[in-house]
Length: 68
Image (cartoon, rainbow, N blue to C red; front, top):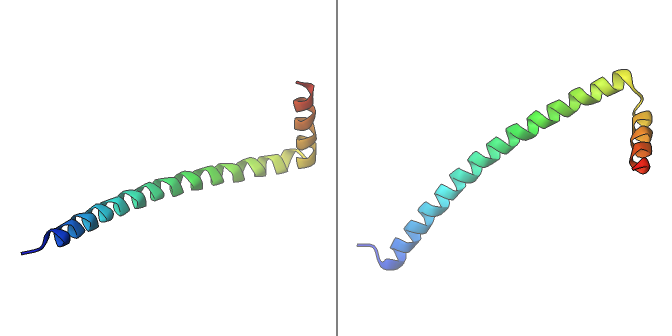
């Protein structure tokens, strides 16, 4: 028959295993979201690179920011 200490340790191990499963599931969701945003950023950079000079865009943004 397990002692009270062993029973507590078994319950704690079960809790930690459940927490690990939860964290790993959350990480998978976060990685998918990150990959989605990175893919969007690549598309935006390609469009910008095709049509506008990056330095011109930054200068225009800075100018509009200082007008406000």
